[in-house]
Amino acid sequence: MTFAMAFHYHRAMAETLASAADSELLIKKSRFLGRVQPVADRKSAQAIVAELRLQHPGAAHVCWALLAGGQSAAVDDGEPSGTAGRPMLDVLRHQDLEGVLATVVRYYGGVRLGAGGLVRAYTDCVAQALKSASRTPIVRLRQLACELPYDLEGLFRREIEAAGGVLAEVSHQAVVAMCFAIAETQADVLLAKLNEAGRGRVNWVAVEC
Image 1 (cartoon, one colour):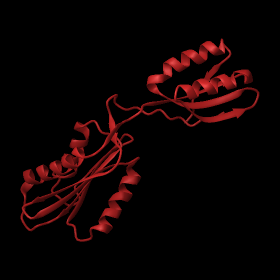
Image 2 (tube, one colour):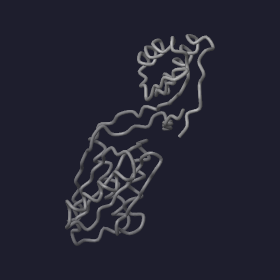
Image 3 (cartoon, helix red, strand yellow):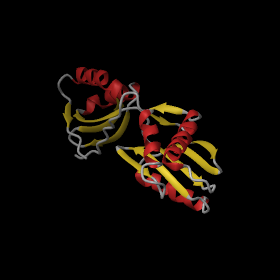
Image 4 (cartoon, helix red, strand yellow):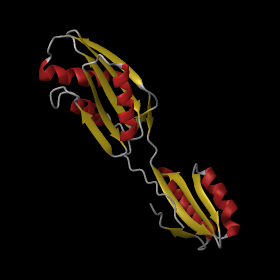
């Protein structure tokens, strides 16, 4: 029996974004177009950045920062090293965000801003976008797998559903095999109920990746 493992570890207060939010700054004739949005992973972020480049062929730089699924990125895209991507990433980290992509498209206005000016511009652009962004808490999940007698299946299904859990897979062989996901905050209470109902007849098994 093989189940997909889905443990998600996040800081307790981590949040993601419910939807995209934009900002626009004009600094010494340079135009900065910022956006923050939820993303699942680096591949999705790269696709979004590639689309931005197509939408803004006249832009001097398309800089971006990512925090998603344990992956991070800070891309200066031709700006002096450390003046764009890293400051943008720092904003995301300081606000305990996860699963978020920040992008800033810059149209150069002909006036150099200097390293300090660039850091402030990219930091402010992301910070302004985040001010109008709707946030949502990240639910930390635990995925569990067990084997149980057929006469307990109905009860287990009801208890898992009542606790807000989601069945990922159920198979019927000599015993019933279940794999389900449950919010970390609800997991211990649910496990206690299921073990009490099972009266020693439930076998919790390792979840294989």
